[in-house]
Image (cartoon, rainbow, N blue to C red; front, side, top):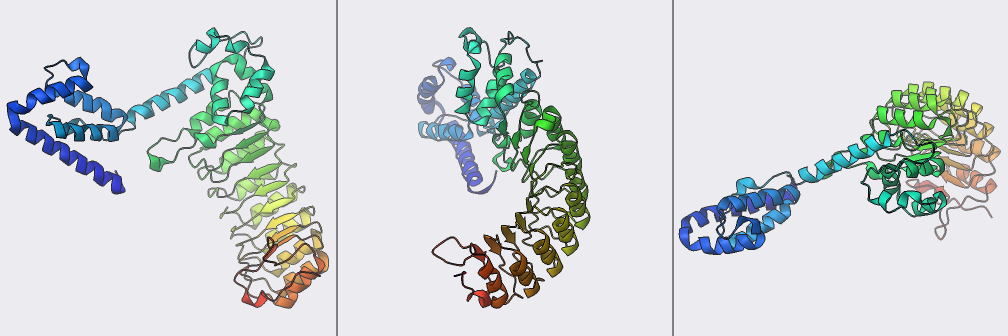
Length: 440
């Protein structure tokens, strides 16, 4: 128990103890009132219900909802009913959690059925009601229209409900988000994401887009199962915030899913250069978000750049192990870059940005926030070579002069610092740059 709610529960339990003691002292006079009240809320106990009936009631009630049980204790206190606080279960989610676990196991078990070839298998994981009602005979186009209006969690349940439904959904569902399966352990729930994802690998095998954002308990084995099930059909995956995914999981992903073009692994703190080396095997990769991957160094970035030359958008924000050498390799190998975020890459110096300006002429967005080693040389190269910039973040770059930044703004008409519109030149923390004006 934590915080204020824990204090309230302890106070209520103390009240229950006082109620018990007071009832014992009152003796015979309180028994008729207690018996009548018990009969109303617990008819099976009979008119002469002993105190054990109250304890049984409290135990059953608190197993499902402790707050309800405590409220019941308070009502009993007013009636002078004998109640043993020892019967209050201090884990109110136990019964609910068991049902949730059973449901998850049921989903995975039924998901393991072999697909029906003629869609004649009408067994239902959730009972035979839908089969008896003829729901399994719905035309697939109607079924898909229904699925289009449902959240991903319900689509997952539909696929588990019958083999024919699963076949139809497997054929046509191309995108699935599993964020609903993640549970915050602070709320007392067990994380079901691994079981759900592993079970879904048996159901959805034609996915093009998968979202596992903030699935903080996702493990490599579940990711491997999903990757192997969908193989080269998978084009985009969002693993941002999956803090337990390791190099092994990414290696399995890239081994099975060679056609990935979009990967988000931001805040995946366990990933090292090995993961980025394996991502280089995805030759169609165009977008990668690696913000916060603290273990990435120039070695991993160079391996990625040399093999994934089609990259157009790269986010290396707060990858503090990256220096100008890694950025130079990226610029030389990935000349089609349009978006580059180096915010927080504190080791990057001018030569890295100069290489980007010289090689990546199509660059539209450049983030250099807190790259404090950069000077006017970086801006001079940008002013000389870049003409398509529509976003430039140089906040925290304290060594740049207004004249150097003004030169970039003058040759890129889409850049401005106007407050009445969304600023495209961000100069926060650089008071000396306040005089920079948009191009006329």
